[in-house]
Image (cartoon, rainbow, N blue to C red):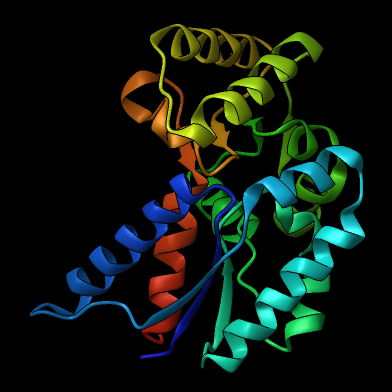
Length: 232
């Protein structure tokens, strides 16, 4: 079994999901008392958040690159970055750490294409929805067209992530607002919905939505477990 390097803390709420899913998946595949072989470096999210909102991505990349080097020193074979937004600096983390990084958009894109879908609504932070690093990965790597909410919905989705979900707060009114935003994405032609922030699974899931839902947290962690066990 390969050793998974978790780069987490962004936020710790979703990093905890990764730890649980990885261990559940390894146990499911191997049986007995098997669990995932992994190491974790968890950063201080407040520091990263401030750099995100100031547009100081190079400084954030330097912090995560150093964390990646620590994972390598601890014996990790590859990196799982437990956040969608910070995949904006994924190439810099790979270069600084010297380890391969399992990009979160790739298992997501493969799951979408496996369902025969090609036009997908994306919920996430404003950075993920508005910048091209994530959408381009899906477009160029998986031939998927991404639809994002309008400006008002993007602001709401972003606010709920940072002010509520990253703090472990789950509110019924926020769930209703997300579901209304999903309805508008559907009306705009979205065939399914990407939960493109690793905390959104705390708020909405497949049971809440008629469209196919793609939970990036679970898809990423499941693929990491398979990779650790040498599964193609």
